[in-house]
Structures are given as C-alpha cells and as structure tokens.
Image (cartoon, rainbow, N blue to C red; front, side):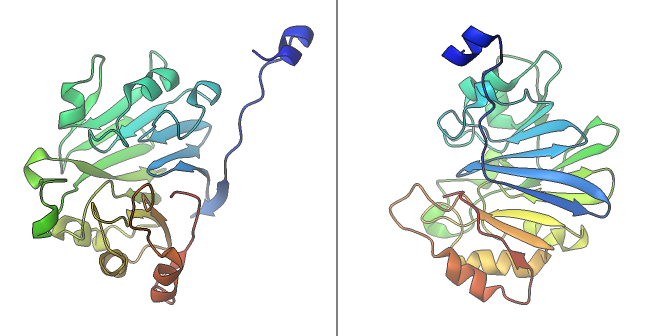
Length: 242
C-alpha cells in the first residue's frame, strides 16, 4: 500500500491501461489491452482475463478474475504467478490440455471442439490452434491440442481469440459463427505472416479485427500494411499489443 493510502486509509489506485468501450448488439463491453497476447474483457461487471503474464500488467492491483482463459503452455501465454494474483476461490479457469497438466488447482481442460458454459450467459468454445507451415511445425504442433477460443456473451456477441495459430481449416470454419470481434495473431517466425493474417480475417470477416501478439521478436510486423490490406473487409484497430 502506498504512503497516501497508509496515511489516509484509502486503497491503492487501480492502474489504467489502454481500453475500448464498445456496444455490440446492445451489449456493453470494455476491452483492455496489456501487452502481446494478454488482454481483458469486462462484461456485465464480470472480468475475463486472457493469457495473463506477469510483466504485462500489474495484475495484483486489478479486479479479481471471474474467468481466466489460457490458450497454451508457452511462457508468454501461461504464467501461474499471474493466475494466482488474479484468481479467487470461485474463479473459472479454462485452459488447454498441456497447461492443465501442470496446473495445481481446479480448471476446465479445453480440447479443440470442447464447449464450456461457466455462466448461463457466457459460452466458451475451443478452436484448434496450430502451425501448418513446414518450417514452423515445431512451435505449435497440432497434436499438442493448443486452443483458441470463441467467447459468446449474452448469446449475441462473439469474440474470437486465436491463440498462436496459422489460418487453419478450423479457423476458416468460423465464417459460420458471425464473429463480432477477432484477436488474430500476426508474429514471425512463430505464427502468421501479414499475408496469412489477411487470409484469416478475409475468411471469417469479423466486424472488428485487433491484430495481437505482433511483437517481442526480432522480425517486426508492419501493422499499418495489415490495416491497408484489410480496407473494406472490416474495421482494423491497432492497439498496443506488441
């Protein structure tokens, strides 16, 4: 607790991060952008954290999690220290098979194709996430069963979070889901090139696309080129997720 709080009995200030407030199909949302693949969704007073990692945010000072999603076990997505800072006894934790194997507490183990409904108005569908390019297969092999997620809020808002993947058949099949918001990775040499990200976005045609997971590597991604390539396809919003 800071000196001011000690002297005057107040609570430490909650840190602020870049965020967007949206109303989609009558549902109000707040999206918060931390870094890389770490984001948060606030919906109906509930706080959903995706791939929290210590160093991306001061999670110990943020609202506790109602739900935490983990896409896969790589260090920049799965961080037990961050989860411990966020969780309450009733926090719902949904994670891929490999992360679940090293998880000491209760969690939902999500395999591609699995569906969880931790709340009556929140539905989570796991989508296979893996590499298809020959030179990248070792990073995210299909047989490990990493996950992306489609989170449906209130039955009317669908948010796709890709995790680390390329434009797979499972991703392209989301064209039937009417995705409102998509977080799709674009990061070499591990996930998608700009061309592949364009292919993925054109396939599912979300209303809003947030490029994410596009930094922390030696080969930078030109997100402005990505935005230009997707003019007329969807609303591309660049946020500090490098």
